Length: 266
Image (cartoon, rainbow, N blue to C red; front, side, top):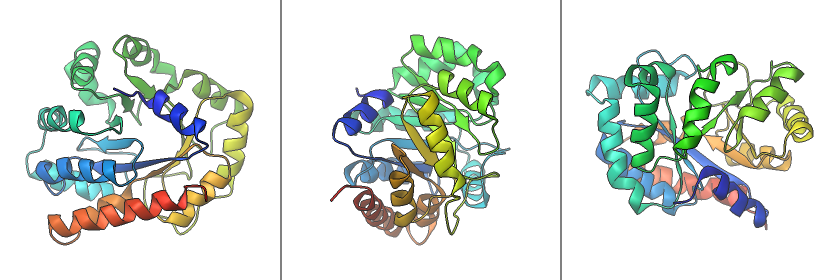
């Protein structure tokens, strides 16, 4: 199975930018999530980020918070998400990156958690509330299980911290395009371009931009600024939640194809 790093290398070899959609597991239900993963995989997604519903999602904006709340109200738990992924992952090509907060990992035990997600084929992990200073306890064991832990760089991060995060991050470096939580924005801050360029000086690892990308023009903009990937979350979550599940699936399929076309070189 292809790792996150390998997928980025494949795309770099073809001079292509990665499209990384995000979904919240269990919204509107897990069966729809399973089908949505397959839809995105065949509609241009290169890597897919899947959020595990959590009761205190500090990094998530209103759209993703609402989706997580709906999933939790329906009783969706981590075990349910992993059982669904065990069935879906063998049927898709895009590596799956789990987005989860640190408490569920600690509650399960770091090694137990990593062993379990690795056994079902998950390839990456984003833990937004994991401080760099405490990351070794997850990063080192993750390597032994073939899980790449992706760290986030914020626009407010000072240069020494940016360099330190770049050294530690696995798979790719996740650039947060704006201060604050996830969500749809009307434009991407020009500071993102500076941050991408700063990372290029200190690291040759792939750089993907998220938090605020909601339109094809945004994805193309970050690609032109030098990003290796565009991460799109709230715009997918919102589309999937509107109308019936069938309508939501059609909507994210069309949106995924439009985004991929925007970042595919002519």
